[in-house]
Length: 318
Image 1: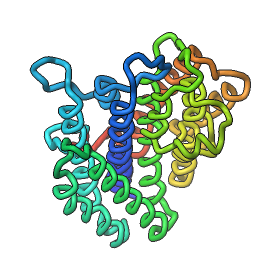
Image 2: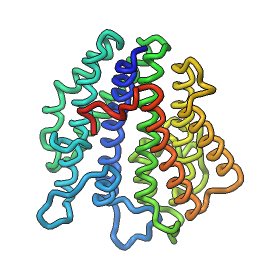
Image 3: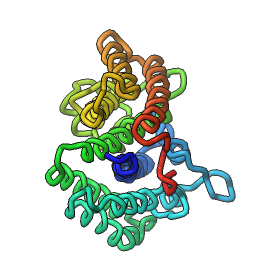
Image 4: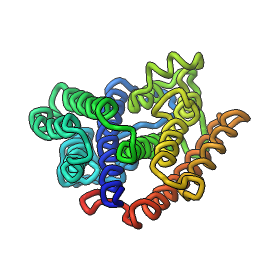
């Protein structure tokens, strides 16, 4: 496969996943903001300042501290912000147009229809009902895209790079959330039930999965451990990295000599070891998030160098 095509497919997957996870995060933090109480002890800190830090965006308010409405607009419908949902979906549509002869017609229809419906979905995003209708639309349409892709594409190199991009973005976004939401130094909540930790699970769509998988109360440590180590949950960091490695092994003619495959394999081995022997207290979880985040940054560079001729991202991507 041409490096240019592989590059577009990888970033198509990343942009679709980024839009979906940003929408989920907005929804989770919005609910936490509405339902939380300032005097509640919390081992997880979800705030609009934190959301901006996760996305690498900056406030535009004159006061220097963004309001809820300003942050929702900035990260959902502001086309000038490269990290907004709208901007990510526009980049995804541009990427899909560039590889229309590789993806299926149903996939193009799915991603193009998102563009056509975004304006209507964005109406009233900061109104009385909040961003619920907008984020619901984005979640359902991105899920449709991935569902159509899984049913209409050959399991060849093209699908491997598309899937690798989507799962890489998932691992990166979940790690960003944990690195911002977990308290520095690993301090834990004094409450056995952390409402903000529940909101963090909601922000990645893992609330029901956590309740089925864990008996423990949703404290900061329990939620972070679940999102880091649980391979049976597909959006956990370990499961996402495992999927990226498998996809690259399929796409690579010589995976045993592939730097990104070898790096991701080492990260997975480290996660498995830490998940079995410990690594579940607050201090070590914060350390694990930092280590894995740094390794993913290096893996992103390795992927670009091995498969895309050193080009890190399309010129239209952030």
